[in-house]
Image (cartoon, rainbow, N blue to C red):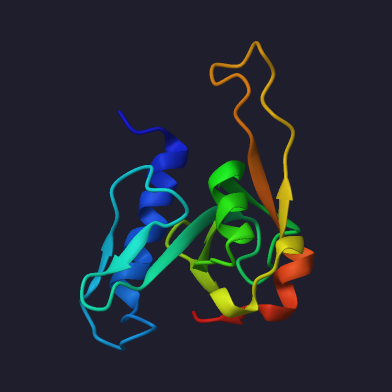
Length: 150
């Protein structure tokens, strides 16, 4: 059974897939969701192989980018950064009071840097996933590189 956060993430992915053609090859209808828990990416173009992450948040104002956005697992992200590999990121902001209202921001891979990714503390030993470590995306650091798409 999917959690509310997983359902929210699925909704963000479906909004990207429904509203956009591939940003690399420009073909429509080719963006597809990847399998759950694929490391560092959520969608793929099944024609050219373009990969992107999708981060979805419920917010009060869909026109104001958050100060931080919850990322995913730190280690896979850090390994890719060390290798100079970044995936573009779509940010879907859904209105808390009217879930039909949303905005979409885009951060191209070539405009990303390590300062945008902030390592979080590992989960405590009492947590279900003790020791797991995630990251946050620093909204203030990435804001100047964002493109509002919708």
